Length: 257
Image 1 (tube, rainbow, N blue to C red):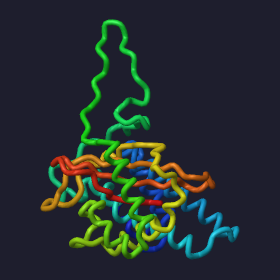
Image 2 (spheres, one colour):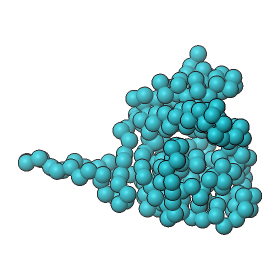
Image 3 (cartoon, helix red, strand yellow):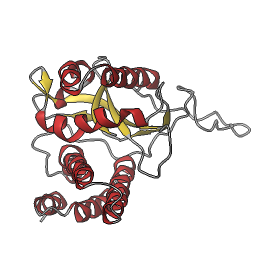
Image 4 (cartoon, helix red, strand yellow):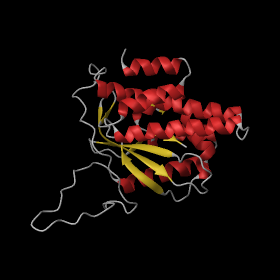
């Protein structure tokens, strides 16, 4: 049985912790960005389970957390594992690139986190070309948060389509699954994060395409970690942004606040 099928079975059984353990083990050395995100999901689950046992948070909160993790497993993690293992080869062509080391940048967008000094007689290293425009991503997330702050939840959901990648849309409106598992939570929690938006971490997910053979959208995806107003010990929120190769503007592919 493939790793993806094992994870599906565990999700069906409601065992998200074991699902994440399988994903973490598989992604080690294959996709550093998603591997790190799975560890964050596991830590968030453990933290909220502990708080629930201590009666710090309600059953509604733990249910919301588990729904968000389940959505990430189904919508992002499983799909990537299938791509890496070749079990979805019939739906994706050409094959995905091998996993690269995650690219971390400073908050001064466009500059390297640590400038390498060339040795005597050697040329400075050449950075790999990237489609990502991190300042555009910050503006996108900033406007998305303004939308959350301006409108009540259903009105905001109706207006959110221009910010989202088409993989999160059903026609011209938000997919019900994303709305239930991610958007409602984001609308409830956005005030926990600093405005203007402040990215404390920027990392490539190594994802180079979204969609199947007929609606394949090639590009690059980055995950941005947002700074909170108060560090209450919980996991920081993240927003995934996809930069299409066709030159279109960046779009949000996942929100976990």
